[in-house]
Length: 144
Image (cartoon, rainbow, N blue to C red; front, top):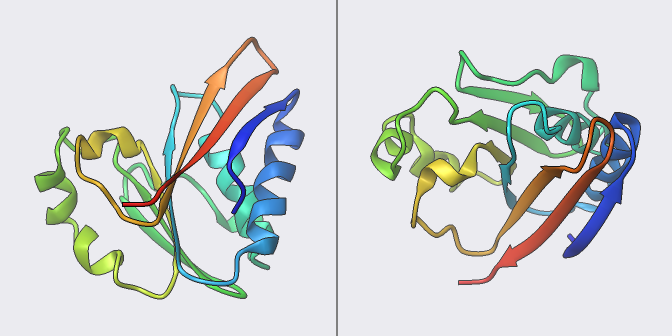
């Protein structure tokens, strides 16, 4: 997965960036997604899923279920921490430690709720709304 700062000018372009990343994933990867409500976290995840040969129509934000699994070329485990209290203990209570051991692509929306908890060899994707259509998407690798 490549690091850098990317600009998208529509939901379709955000989807395409996710697709390009998903298409190139070949092994277990953890992606922490941050951004305000409506920034495009789920759109990005739908694109990533499509790149993994998963129907993007099947991918919805797991705000109420907390965890969704999708089978494609690789297993996608999609978590949403929005409704959980801040802090790692709440995330561990839904089985985060076991999920991180899975040979899967793990996407965690609202990753900032994990606080200082570091997931080695993960990627942090921050989506910033610049205006109604434009997004800045910064991807950084966490190596520790």
